[in-house]
Length: 46
Length: 258
Image (cartoon, rainbow over all chains, first blue to last red; front, side, top):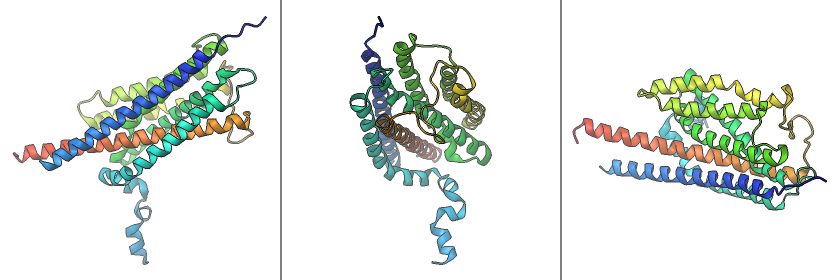
C-alpha cells in the first residue's frame, strides 16, 4: 500500500516564506526610501 | 520639427537612453513618478498569481497539491537568474563605460537578487522533501543555484569591504562578470547531467509540457515577481541617490563652514 503524506505543511511553508520575504523586502525598501527623502529634504532646508 | 530640434528632445538620438539616464538626478526624475505605477502593477500581478496558484489552480495528477509550490518557486528562480544577468550587465557598463548609475544599480540589485534566490532555495527544499524524500540533494541544478546565492552574497560583501568605493565597485563588477558563467550552467544543468531536479517544463522554442490552467497562474506570478524585483531595485536606487545627495550637501556645507 502506498503511503501518502500530508503535503500542505510544505506548501504553506513555501508560500509563507515567499510572502514574508516579499512583505519584508517591500517594508524595508519603503522605510529606507522615506527616510532618504526626508533626510534630503532636511539637508536642503539647512 | 527640424533635425536639431528632434535631437534636443529625443534622448535616443544623442547617445541613447543608457547615456541619458546615466545622470543619477535625471534617472530619479524619470523613476520617481513611475514608482507608484510599478507598485500597483507589482501588487496586482503578484497577489493574483499567488492566490490563483494557492487556491484555484488544479492539483497535479502525479504530485498532487505539492505542485502548487511551483507558483512561487519557479518565478523566484527566474527572477534570481534574471537579477544576476542584470547585475552582470550593470558590471559591464561600469567597467567599460564607467556608467555612474550602473554602480548604484549593481549595489542595489545584490540584496534583492539574493533574497529571491533564498526564496527559490527554501521553496525548492520544501518541495523536495515530499517529492524526493529529502530537503536537499547535491544535484547539479540545486548546487548551481546555491553557488548563485553565494555569488550574490560575495558581491554584497565585496562592495562593502573597501573604504574606497571606486575600488569596491571595480572588484565587485569583476566578481559579477566572472560569476555570470554560472547562469548557463544553471539553465542547462538539467540537460547536461542526469539530475533529480526535473527538466525544463516551459520552452520558448518548443511546446510547453504544462497545461494552460497551470501555465496562466505561473506566468502571472512570474510577471508579478519580475515587476516586484524592478520596483524594489528602482526604489532602492532612488533612495541611494537621495542618500548620496544628502551626504554631498552636508559635506559641501561643512567645507564652506556653515
